[in-house]
Image (cartoon, rainbow over all chains, first blue to last red):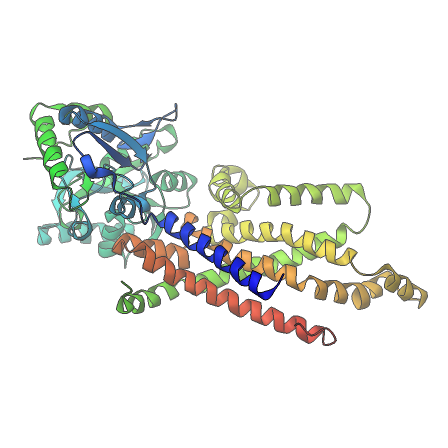
Length: 292
Length: 230
């Protein structure tokens, strides 16, 4: 092969490589949301039972799937629901791979810098789960809720928990506000392990590799209902507000204002006629309807 | 579009994962090399009882993805805690760090043993016969003739394997170890700037691997002075 031929060959390869990379990053992909009034694609994680998960038939199921279908019916829009890794949700939304995120995602100031949210459709406090015979476990679920925006009260509650958790290994899902919470308030007290999915930290709690979980109460309740977690319990108070933001909402691109309006109206209706209460009691045994 | 200040900002954070990446790579490559050498030598004999289990081990670890191996060794064995505790091995499998080293080490041992087996078989028969004509024992022949030639011959293929292992450590974050890639994913979730963060993380891997390739090339050149590379 002559030097010239080699050169052209290289160029073609390089072009192909660049094209492949851009393709992977989703550049040049058109935004599907051009006409949100007819059809939209909603992405969920599919690994966060009972909010969204893949059921035994391999289909997406859960509170948010039911709610998404209900909202779509109200909006008279055809919806496709797909599963996407948690970490890729916001980047993929931004490049237009789908139009809406409904994946147990909290509305936070930080996320609002990048994407927009509807009003919350659920509010669910974060809590620890530990072995029943551990120091913290003996407290059990206090049923108390602390709003992190009320600093004095919530800091007092956190200081009370700290000695009970000293040196323990806490499992928490990576890239979540749960992780931010544990880092911020318990970073100097516990050892943190970051997991890709909550299913994975559940497995490690059952295996005895970690001492505690920190997650949303509804997710913990579902986990602890399984027989292998009979010796574990949700313990201490629940935390809301502050870095957990305003609750769980549907994420969308900032420019999709019309879609946001439609979704907000549909959520309003679903709150008003008790649909969210019904769906939430079906899936999480408690009512997570946001207080208007 | 390229924001230099942002790169300067994330680099120290990403580099904080470098010790973990290097520890995982160094431990698994060292353990893997020793195992690979033993397995390659054991296969030189023709004892079926010895050779077949090794072949099976190599086939399994070469034939399945490293990701699956890490998952099975960590989450899979985690389900057998009582048996592992009874066997006195739970302290080892309890820690994600050791599980990662075991998975990476076994994987590279499988690939490495095939590389070394080929290199040993590539040593000219005449040299071995000459050694035996000189009255060298089999062990002495192995030490003075076969291994030096085979190991030198294996350097280019083995450097490939080493580089694959360095990149393989990026899978350790799925079992909670915060090496460079794990930290990169954390940064992306905070900043949502996937392109910049992955470019920076990629640059770190590129630098490590370029250094290793250069060092191994230099080693090969030094060991084969009569065959200078073009």
